[in-house]
Length: 476
Ligand SMILES: Cc1cc2nc3c(=O)[nH]c(=O)nc-3n(C[C@H](O)[C@H](O)[C@H](O)COP(=O)(O)OP(=O)(O)OC[C@H]3O[C@@H](n4cnc5c(N)ncnc54)[C@H](O)[C@@H]3O)c2cc1C
Image 1: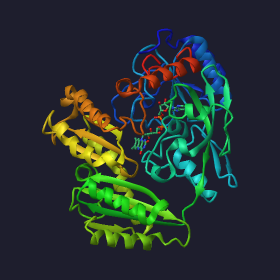
Image 2 (image 1 turned 60 degrees about the horizontal axis):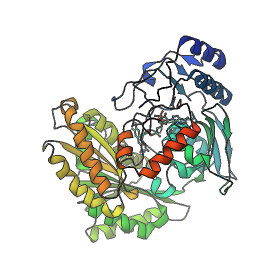
Image 3 (image 1 turned 90 degrees about the horizontal axis):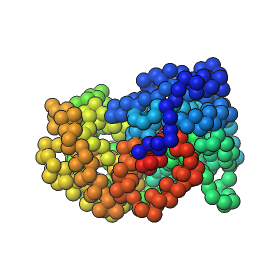
Image 4 (image 1 turned 120 degrees about the vertical axis):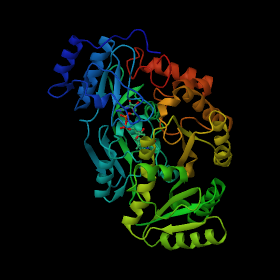
């Protein structure tokens, strides 16, 4: 539900915004700001605001508040839950942070990089690397996703297992609040218990509580030695046994442990055949694992020994250690191309879920029956970050049929999977956020006391409801 007090962005407001933001600061709503990666939502906006200073963001927010006009924050536009797209209600403005894209500072002694909200993740990686450091947040959209959106969604990705998600990598934020005031919260401090931590409210709030304009982000030592393995296993149970073995033998050196189903490999062969598998799939499941550590840690030799033991014990059926950086990248290309292949095939419903590690095998075993009860012909591609319990569970039409033919089934597919996840003590929104896709799910599965507190927080920080109306909480 959109708050009733909001109004359409009109000509006089756009004139005031144009004057406040200067040349290039207000543009017509180019379609690229109004669509999203899965092509499910089509937004509307009177204009796209492109402020290039924090003061300009604050001025824009003040003018929109005066006019009671909604603001849809927009960073890289790669969000998968429609948080950056507003389809209905009073016509808003989109506020893009793309021109706020500077790396403000790299503090090597503090191990902190300060980047503006529009900085692209790959550019933050490059700046960290140039300083001899490593910024571990890593996801397939890193060439487009920007710091504001990554923090807005509390993005996860491939290295959560070792380094945590975006929240864990952020020491402080600078943000424009709904009244146009600026929260100067950039920090290099590991410890600061002086009052409520606004950073943690803003991170993951998907632009509904404030507009992040910059962040101070934690850097880590650049890994000196890395080993990456492609392994075949017969079942999720075997993959979990392999994970336990890697943890036991390589411990904190484990960065990523990704599980992929053979259906995803079929989708790759069908839609992106130039992406080649490291080895033919002789099993239903493949694992991609990466470890890294300091100089002299000999992670490759240790991983090779582990792999030999896993093969001998029958935990893994086959395994390959990357012998070069090019081969390592070709392993990762397979994993990172799966979402693109999925998009080409076109899912009926996609689910970003997490379940406790002890329930993962049960979830993967029960899911197909829940889907088959609705339609036996549907295909499932389950893959994801097994190491942190986060799976992407996407349901597709049979070969040769289009997802639109199954529109009426989408709600039932989603409910079947989400009910199962909830039943197993999991979360139906693991890393992509709530956006507009999962507002009803949050209502359905969320804790009532938490929902009530969320509404009160929203009302306190954004009483006019201008920040990302309708995202995350209904009536917000
Ligand atoms: C191929 C592909 C792979 C992906 N892989 C992963 C993955 O492994 N892990 C994962 O977590 N996600 C993944 N995603 C989802 C997506 O990349 C992340 O959600 C990312 O964090 C979004 O960043 P963005 O800059 O594109 O934000 P946008 O899509 O522009 O916005 C996302 C949300 O943040 C809000 N927002 C934008 N800017 C700000 C700001 N300055 N302040 C406050 N709120 C703001 C928006 O309103 C919206 O609600 C993937 C997406 C794609 C397309």
